[in-house]
Length: 344
Ligand code: PHE
Image 1 (cartoon, helix red, strand yellow):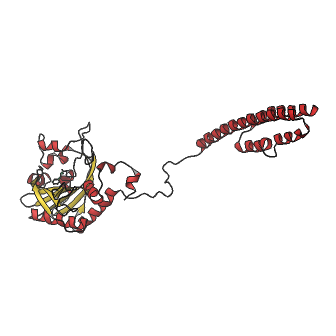
Image 2 (cartoon, rainbow, N blue to C red):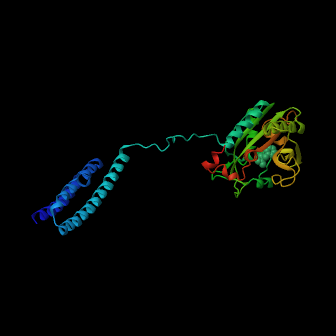
């Protein structure tokens, strides 16, 4: 009986003792040590239960129940304390450690965006033909985007390009043609330039329309430049780019800054002109608008149209990349979707 009482008491005392000890612990390591001391295989509870062997079956049963309850209680206490300590440690390390969220993630190597890849490729082809690369601002003045390109203030052709305006009266350039007159102002003819760049239109987006996309403008100014020169340069570029002979055709097209103006189509590369889904069974794919530079534009750029002539074209770079890789939706480009980008 004495034995039974003393075991029971030591279990009850143990509970109080542990409660006190736990509350004074300040780190997870010491908590684990204490746990082993008490509830581990060779811990105090096991030691106490070893003394049970001389007791009657009823007494054993009763002590057993008390011991199990105690174990459960203590386990909960340890768990709660552990959570509390871990939280505290995280708080402390957050306060003293600087965490660099821009640090590169291991094993994730970036790559060049498909638009840039093709842009560089196209640039190389034109550089080999003697063209220079130029750039212009994305936030533009009306005069460079429209006015000096022979769009009068109320010209209906302005409606062809829905425009983002800033409150100060600037606009986001709607085409890379905005660089035509800027280039004329700084270069002395003869010259040949290309202008790759980002352009913006206030547009309802769908699979083939985006508010932000990429164009590549081309322009040549020299004496006696004709449509034949334009066609030759375009065919040379396209055959090099697509690595096969490309058949082109010109249809009339209207832009205020060229005269005559054209839409250049290429014979469908998928079906060789027989008709398929890609060319909508017409055998032709509309590729780029172009034309001979309007005399008013040359004048606006300070170039005498009696002496100099030129051609210009505006290639849809986004469109070209979509054709090359069979990309079905233009909105993928700026989506930031890693799974899309990792394919290139
Ligand atoms: N800038 C025109 C557009 O974006 C395209 C173009 C460029 C047409 C050069 C003719 C000559 O629609």
